[in-house]
Image 1 (cartoon, rainbow, N blue to C red):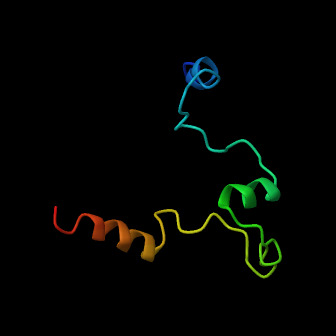
Image 2 (tube, rainbow, N blue to C red):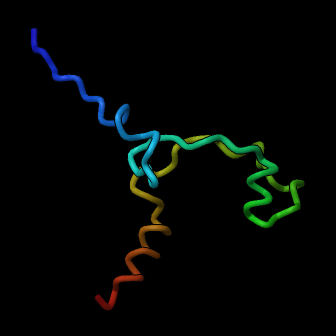
Length: 75
């Protein structure tokens, strides 16, 4: 059987890191907190119950990728 060395980098570093860029989740917030952060007090249109909940385009939407590319078109 192959023995794989234990990988515990996150165990050693995730609690004291200033910016945790390796995490796959974030601390939970309420919808009220999200609205306050966004400066939007209109919660009537907050939830679209017909929107499917997915991870979306893994590499980013075409619009996002196009907008990012436009930032570098003269580079």
